[in-house]
Every structure is written in structure tokens, then in C-alpha cells.
Image 1 (tube, helix red, strand yellow):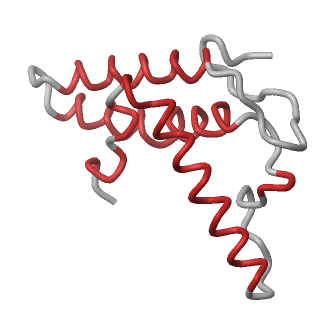
Image 2: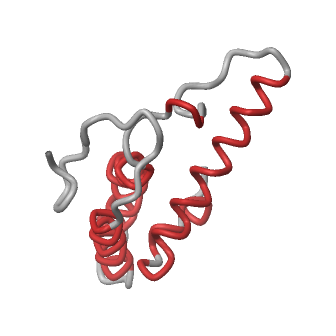
Length: 117
């Protein structure tokens, strides 16, 4: 995995759009799995994905993207990577303001600003 592969959340102006697109991609994969008679991957079932797409994507950013860029910043102090980490935090804030839910909504689980119960 390369940091560039996970750069979507580094651009706060596109964080919500990026999150919607990735959710749609996952749902299309789940539909294809169902068509092929395969078990639908966890979280890829459009009919009952559970929770808000924004919360689900924020959790991914919090647990994968931000730690990756945080580690890169720690390894290369004095570089502009600190600005990228700040931008990731701005993306999390933008997702916290998004209030679109998927079917089979469940309580929010993310603990970031604006996303807690």
C-alpha cells in the first residue's frame, strides 16, 4: 500500500465526494458478488450496510489513513506532511457534518469530533 493510494482524505474539499464514491464502489462490488452467488463481503451490502456512509468512511480515515500519514510526518519532521495531517483532520470534520444515512441505519460509532453519539 502506498500513501498516494489513500490520498483522497488529504483533500478536504473532496472528502465527502470521495467517501460517497468509495461507498458506491463497495456496494457495486457487493451486488456483483450476490449476482455470482458469492457471500457478500462485510460492509458491501447496500440493503443493510449499517450506519452512515460518512461515519464508516471516517472510521477508515481515523484508523488507517491518519495513522499512516502521521507516521510519515513523524519520520520526516520539518516537511509539509504536517499540513497534510491537518487536511485529513479537516476532512474528518467535513464528514462529521455530512448527514446522509444508508438503509438499515445503526447508531453512530465513530468517536471523532462531530461523529460521536
